[in-house]
Length: 379
Image (tube, helix red, strand yellow):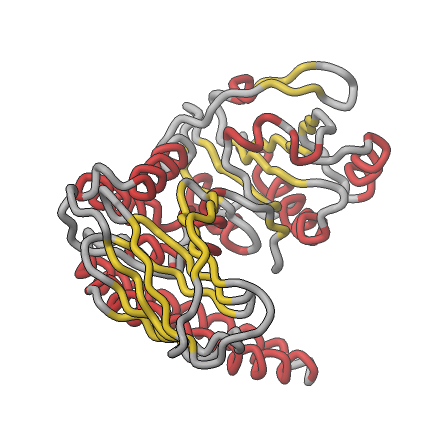
């Protein structure tokens, strides 16, 4: 099932920082960055930008000599991310710490030759890039098998492929964790977090952030990443869900704390969200099975048109409490709950603490059966 995604601080990190960092001397400055462009272009420029707190700031424009080589230097007090942009064709992402770096690029091909040497961090990043490339190839092959099974309408094979893939991913995740632990406190570990899901692997991701920040107190990126994890800790499993109040379709105000005493699924959705609408029948079934046992649902819509919201409630037969401020992604609770895409849900215990996140399909029914036991069949 697809999830509709928005930009987030972590997504910005993932997009900008496929690179690394290693040990440091906090007072080191004047790190040299040199390199060669094999296929320089007549149009465009070569720029060097610093990446800090999810922002990109150009700090230098580079020029090639007669041998198509370049050299520059930057001052740093701790490891930081930088990007070399070659004519808007190819990008090399660096972490500058204490070691001089050497870069060799194609310059004309986005996926062409790219070699970065000079630090242990770049060795770590090469490891991560190799894992990513291998994983992408495996996913492509599995997708082909899945599409073939779907075209043949072989539902059993489709399910087996999905189950095998998930099992394979879990095994790989454990191996990647070990590799990342060996990289710490290198900032390369931040890039390694792209292999993990904060809803499932938050404790590990938080540990990585804490170790990197402790080792590099003068690094803006290390501090920024830790801040992101600290914010996410507020809505991690085991945390008290932040309270909020919103209006119902009837105009009454409902607060999350009103549901204390029961397990409640806080379901963020919208009428315009196709994956949400596809999941709604599953939630309806779960509510029907467990509502008599005390199970509650609070639907929080990110709609912007009242008529669309109300029609979807009716069409999808959503019989539980619904609230919305009709402010789309500008709904304040979106920021507080770090919602990057919908459908998104939290299961809270009777005290309002988060016990699970994003339970969809059979996982929702399995968790509710664990809490309430299997429901008695209707007489």
